Length: 167
View 1: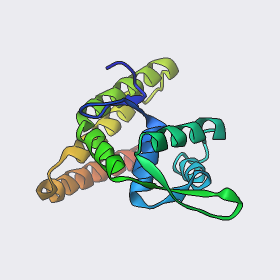
View 2: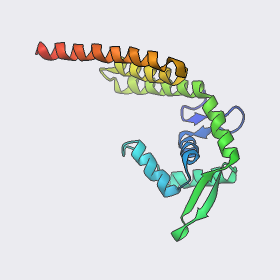
View 3: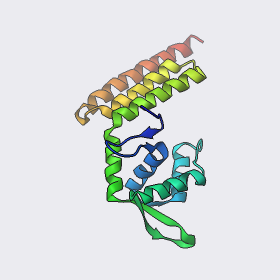
């Protein structure tokens, strides 16, 4: 685990979280660099947007590695990027390393909890872990997981109601 922000395929070059998101986003549909910036801003609730000086060199590198390509050049030389077959394969390989990536995110989460010392760190950690476990559930277990989570929500609502009633 060399870097928390790098995600390796089975063989080949590690990818930054931003590069990984670009591949993921272009997998869904072609976009311009500006569209990618806006999407990241939206997905992070406006909390973070990479600078053009960060994004465009990554796009250039991915293009030089034949993972993305310019599909068309629009008005004002606006390039629309799409994923190449090699880009699709690379994204798939990285996604196959889900467990390692998840472990990296847990380490990062633990560091943040340590630094900021949240009073609900244990609860937030458990919620994060639940999210990760849900990702690994086989589809045939989804209904069972839904029932467990619905029971959990009911119990938490009872706690909330009891706390409100005692105030």
